[in-house]
Structure formats: structure tokens, C-alpha cells
Length: 278
Image (cartoon, rainbow, N blue to C red; front, side, top):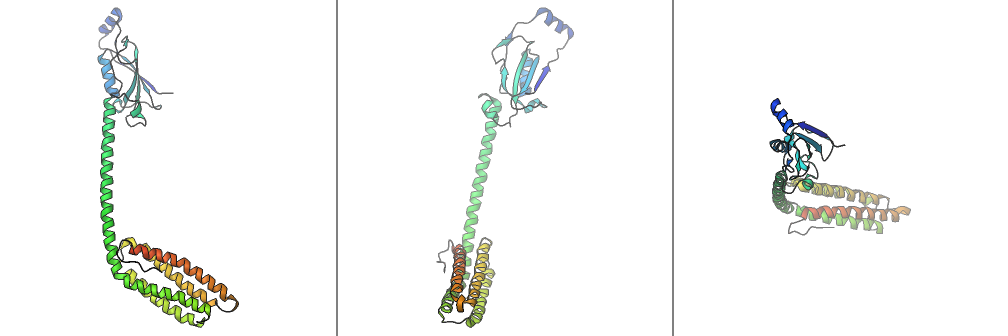
């Protein structure tokens, strides 16, 4: 049930009180207080001679502690009605920060005007923050692109040599499957391949690697390890297991080829240099 609070205005002077009772009072017009702060509403009503106020929380079940933190959203009786000054004026109240307050305040409420101005200020600040964030992102993107172009210029030769070595590894695997290379040749070939790839990764990591491309280089490193595993699957490409081993090696190669190409494309993105994809 909504919280109610009754406030009785003190009557100064016992004689004045007796005079009011003796003489009675005619109904007077109720002033408009809906839409203003609760403390101001009480003062307006008191100035009009009303002594009894019933404050009811229109949103929840709260007890007002500071009248200035509340606003009148509705009054009973409404402004313009006439009533005896001894009768109670009911004020339905809420807080300016309550959800839905904009919909229940009178359109001419000065508090509603304050809320709308605050909303507009917030919207302006948010728009400015968004603009600054967009400007920063644009500048950061320009810097990243410039860094990437410089980086590509430093690592492109090594990347093309690495592509040639990986392509050759695929051909070597086909030669093993066709019997043009023996399983014994794999040991020396794998060592040479690993040495080439180690040099390539060292170049990628040592040529002023931009922060935003670190993940791409890590993906290349993992893919290169996968190509090494591809060569290892060829060890069993003899006898009855030869065909299945070659088939498995091709699957391994294809899986790492995709991730390798994605990483290389990421590094070359935005540059004028065509990426050396497998």
C-alpha cells in the first residue's frame, strides 16, 4: 500500500485559532502544485491557508525524508477546485529519477523541464564521447595500417620464401606417396624444413611486430608446427599403411593451410602487396 504522510501546519497564536473556529471559513480555490517540488508545494498550499497535506508515494512504498528530493505528480483535489482550508490536500509524489517519471509529470512541470534538459545534456555528452571514440578509433586504425604496411615491407621476402618451402613440402609428400622419395628421406627433409621455418618465425617476431598482428603471427607459428606434423605422418607411408598415411597427411596439410592463409592475409590486409598464400 502506498506510503502516506500527513503534515499539519502549526497555527501561530491560540487566539487566532479560536477566531477561525468561531468565524468558520469559506471554501477557497486550491492552487496548482502538481509538477513542482514537494517542499515548494507545501509552501504554496500553506500560503493559500491549507494546513493538512497527505503525501502518497505514487511509484512504490517509500517515506519521503527530504521534501526537496520529491516532486508532486498529481494533486487531489485538482487545481482550481474549491475546498475548505481545514480539509486535507492529497499529493501523489515521486522522485525525479524514478523510472516512468517523464510520463506522469504534467507537461508544464518545471521539474519535467529540468529532467528533459538533463536528458539533453546527457545525450550531448554521449554524442561527444562517441565522436571522440570514433576519432580515436580512426586514428588508431590509420596508425595500425601504417605499421602493418611497414611491417609487410620487412617480412614479405621471408614470407614468400616460407610459402615456397611449404609448397615444396606438399610436393615432397606426394613424392613419398608415389614412391619417388623414401621414408628415409623424411628425416633430413624435415630437419631442413624446420630450420627454414624457425628462421621465418624469427623474422616475423623480430622485425618490429605491431601489437595488433601478434595473434596472426602466433597463428602462423601454430600452422608451421602443423606442417611439421604433416611431414611426420609420412613416416608411416610404407607397406599396407602407405595409402592411409598419405590420405591423413593431406588432411593435416589442408587444415593448417587454411589457418596459415588466414593469418598471412591478416598481416597483409590494407597493404598494396598481394599476400603470398598457399
